[in-house]
Length: 266
Image (cartoon, rainbow, N blue to C red; front, side, top):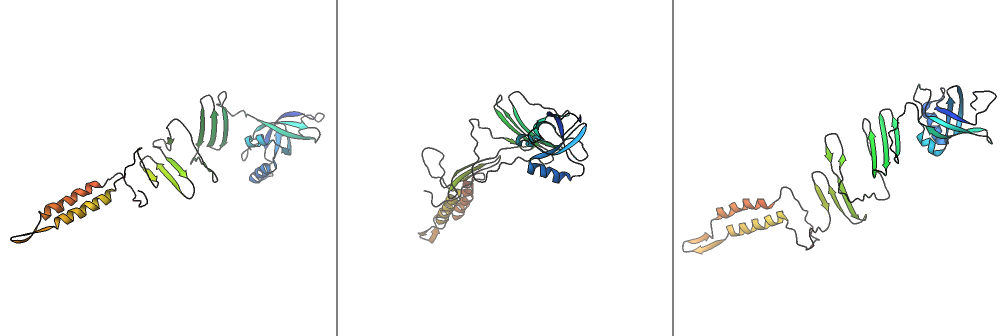
């Protein structure tokens, strides 16, 4: 019990989160989260250990760094039946600043120079997720379900550095046994699908390498064709001129667009 006056027991008050000097900081904080309790002290002294904390407050508490005396400033009340304090809220410290807006909800944690922040702002109709530090990461993980984004605005741009903007989209339709996938980056569009139709009317695509191979065979056949004449068997037409045309068939092959042959597609 914090007793600033030996004759009076305070029913409520403001105190500070502390780490006992004799405790290992890492192990002590681990025990705090495991048990839902903390140690508190007032500026006048009087440390109390194993003080219960509400679940919501536990997420907001900041413990003092090595060598520091006080952590978060908290409000406690006295449970007279059990004769113990309970931490019920966390106050903003004197060295803290808040840049929240009206009707905005912010989740923010800071450690050293690193900050992670989520802002929900119904006024601007926006959700902002921000990380900063030496190597900031934003990870979205859902191992048993799907993550879906729905928007009428076709804007999927992520800033990956101060100088580079990269667009990455992925659409997957189907199930684990059979699915189609479209992946778009800033340089390529990859389509993994059994059948791909661009318009309402279906028309077969031409595989450039197959078309080139066919015309090469046609030209070889023509170049090797002969005819019987009075002076003997002669080439039907100039063979060298025909074979030169095979160089032109290379133009059938695109340098930018590629398709994989699928014999099951009609």
